[in-house]
Image (cartoon, rainbow, N blue to C red; front, side, top):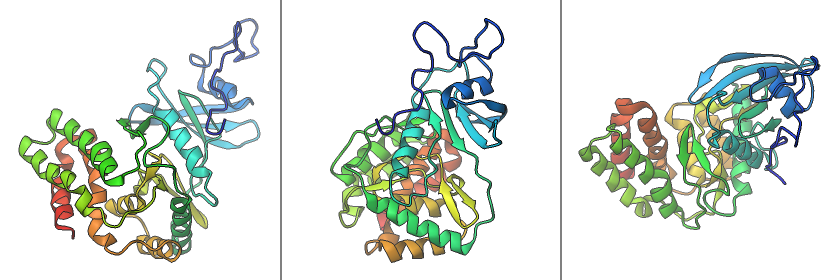
Length: 317
């Protein structure tokens, strides 16, 4: 089935296929070395693997196959329960990658604890690569989605994200993308009740601020500059919170933390799929979701920016 992992059940009945070839002591792929675990999920020898750090709730490793092919690996710590976060990432990348000419980096293999990706040798971004990214992003969005949301449990970073399908974007965005993170930020004390009332006014006004109705787009969902890797003549996208959503959300997030040659990206995008009139007045509305997520993850450091963005969204400017 499309989108399913290459190796869901990595131990067959009655035996462990992750044998190291060292006598009668096979290794369980969860407790073995990273190279052994990767050998199981990829079904081929892995020459070496080395941990390179961590991000949120997962560990980062680099690996190399026996033919020299280099890999990038995200894995949950050995003792951590499988939450679904890596499954959501792999399914999202696979779904995005089904679009013709998609810039999404498709996973090589995955299960509920590991995602294996091609290693990307990054280059300096160029105007030509930015223009190609803009055209590819437009094509990805135009591929569309059946509904807003997705048929899998969602995550943005380590936080759960409600992907229950919906046919109405304003209510979907308000109730599944804004209000849950507003409540989370309030509950953990990163926003005060007074702060929450400011944001609540924007949440309650999404229907009036949303602009012309559009069909569900196939969006990345977490498209900040760190999830864009530049390589030669193009760029690839990683770490999605993929979903059927509003295409302006991806473009608004690209501008939130800055992207090299963003004007070139946007101009090329508009040549393929022109944005609806008034899109500039809606940038702040779409940026409110990732900013609330940042308040939940990093605390009050993003409080002022989130509040200012909510006020700007209400002004429609």
